[in-house]
Image (tube, rainbow, N blue to C red; front, top):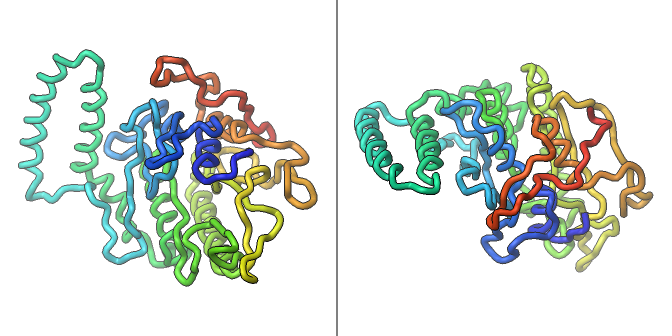
Length: 337
């Protein structure tokens, strides 16, 4: 894509609409991201588990599909011994009181629903019921309890934040959560707080030496785990950023780095019943631009939607009532099917 910035690159890659973003905080998107589209169309697999769990929301969202499609956020560090997900499960001593208050809420909502002319209450009912199910069911409590994993498994993923987040993601998808997004966080011992490897902030090669082994360990462990559990055809794993970095090194006071570059980047896919073991497309010799079999962000999203069984001609009405395609001019990557 042609976008050089974090905000617009993210919007381009996950919504199929380049550059259409309110670029001042809180960075409200003009179009829904793919994750909210999937949640809207496919919903929850289980009523006592959220459809989408994430540890971070960055530069994108549900837009005109509604805030009710935002993910359930788990912001803690599962690598910490005191890790606990708030708002999941309920103490037995409070169960009876909670049930009484839930019944009172339902009675009040029935009265308010009679006055509701736009269907907002019905959407709220579904949201409330989902929240109640998560609080009162043991399924969510078990799924988020990473301490149930063996030391061997936890060591295989790595005793660091991203390793344990990905292990938690495997637990969640196995339990019935449809969609999980994991942000690659700060790695202990690094200066880097992200993959934004400008020469002015840190030495790209020093950071890569500590960062890449962690990424390799985590992704390899997750793929092996999914395959060993027979989930490789059911789960599509995406490893991606919003852009790449300049082929040409920059230099700041003798410190090397790379700046933003959207013209050529790559995305790693695994599972989902797709044809694995191949590289699709190539770049020019210096990695500046695509050369053979170029893939657009819309082609990438069309591939995801097709894998999920979502018709590519699906449209939603935006805030003005205009029908908008979920992926205009996008063609699935045929080599994967």
